[in-house]
Image (cartoon, rainbow, N blue to C red):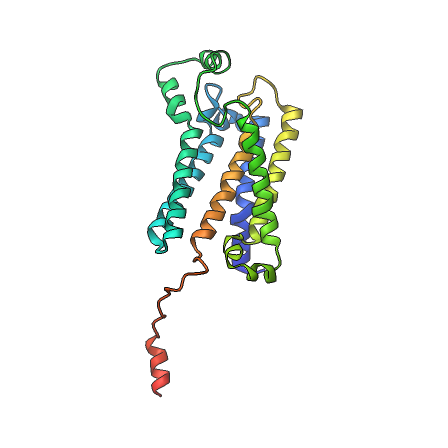
Length: 251
């Protein structure tokens, strides 16, 4: 196995899985008494799990903005700008548009927050309204299966028949990220069933560990996509010949 292949395995699934698994074990077994680091009692939104999600979203936003500035074709430029806008929206949704920071700074207790959320039904974000969370989850699962599992597995002869399909198809390494996402989710559910309780900070919200991997697989895909060129671009500049090449021709 080449060094490049080992590096890709580390990036695509080994390191993110290790970080996620470490967070799971620390949370459910309170290893080294660090559970509050993963999800504090005062507000789980201030925990490491939530902030790793935010960091990943910020990286998606940053990659998209850089790609939009670098690309010359309008379709790519506006496409990456759209991705950046969506990433910005996701960031605001994850932090409840800054409300949980405001609540903490104004001294609201956990009991007051629970009363506002579950009794008064106060608005904090869009994705938790009604049954929208379940709809979003199902849409994400379908997208992951199609885009990050089926597309990479398509034979090359089929991809070559459609330049756009070939452009949009992720590398096969991303399948390992998708499988890791599934495994992490199942481990979280098993641990929650065996060791979880209603008094724990993430009671009813162990899907936060899964969300970490969902954002990570999106980051991997955006990184891949930003390194490609649209298949119908024809404005490639001819590569400059090296001085050594010129000398060989003259000789």
